[in-house]
Length: 71
Image (cartoon, rainbow, N blue to C red; front, top):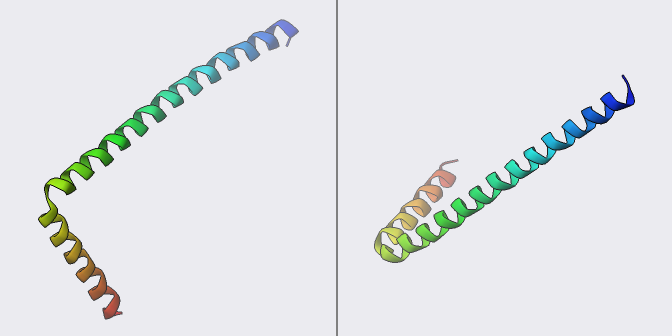
């Protein structure tokens, strides 16, 4: 391979890596926003439904305790 061909190959690789990095950043930002939204929505639901939250927590604790005690 000539130096020109190697240089072109390196430039093409750099462009692809730059595109990959940009796409990765965009996906990461989207996932982070979705997780923030999920956390906010969950907190709002818990505040609006304290009775269901308490019953669910108690039921989960009872089930975990029962499963641990069985072994």
